[in-house]
Length: 167
Image (cartoon, rainbow, N blue to C red):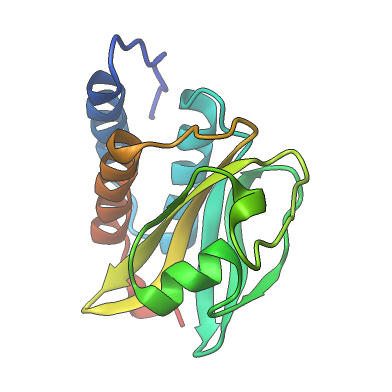
């Protein structure tokens, strides 16, 4: 049984080191990607300060992302590839960090309280198959340290999950 411990940290490096340890332990005995996405979203939402949404979108066709497990307010269900921050991250195949979502062309406002966003593409065998998306009600919430930390956590999620039964 996994017991979430309070993430006490002095620096972001400490926070992400603790989250890597906790996520590794949380996913160590499970390979189902949906279960792992649900637990990853719950861990991030519960442990990260100033985050009002944490979750996944998965490609279900070449042109569309579909909402996966998440924590936060109800969200947009379908996002076209190339549209909004999530769809743009898929199209580019790179992480996108947005300081102020109102300044991002084509931003999709699922939650009017969200002001900044960090979207990490999920890559398996060289192909993007989804994204890990974090939103914050604070402008400029995510920096390069957050990006590196969340990219490392996304890699743990991808590695732990057995995708042979999905899609």
